[in-house]
Image 1 (cartoon, rainbow, N blue to C red):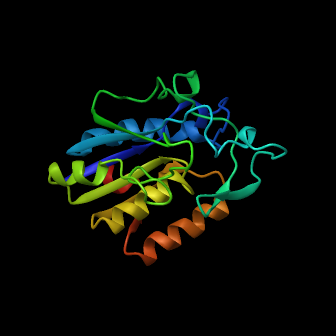
Image 2 (cartoon, one colour; image 1 turned 30 degrees about the vertical axis):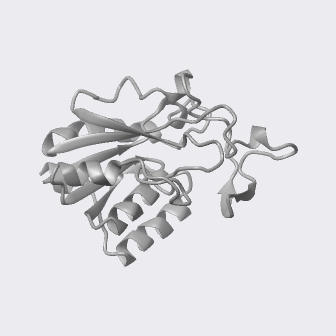
Image 3 (cartoon, rainbow, N blue to C red; image 1 turned 60 degrees about the vertical axis):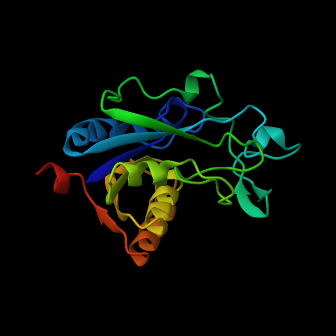
Length: 203
């Protein structure tokens, strides 16, 4: 049994959003085509309170993309994004949600960031995604979405750590930094994951 994880296809990560991923909207048609090929489709959603400490605006004198520390971990400070109940937090209206069986929200604790769909960055709290997948008899996890070098990467990494056979769908993901994405893919391969393209699933 295999599952497709749609990572953070939200307005703030798409063109015009507060933390837009370059060409982020290009993944949506691919993801819509891929969904019927899976036993299970789930989505993750950044769901930040306004006072989230990953926002540069909550640190006096700091600018977006400066690096600081949160809970002893290196933290990039981001523009405000995916604030609960804002328009930016919503999934793209172009994304087919009809097959999505569950949504896992992350980044709800203002004290620590959460890139992965499985855990916050310090592994302090689980979202319950791994147990949900196991409960559905999933063995293979395919990860795609935004951004390839952050939330897709960390979700794939945790899927591997949780014992799932893990595939990152390269052309159905877009990074903030291409260089960061190359390093992320190398890391996934070194952990036993696989990098594939959507054509391998659609053919």
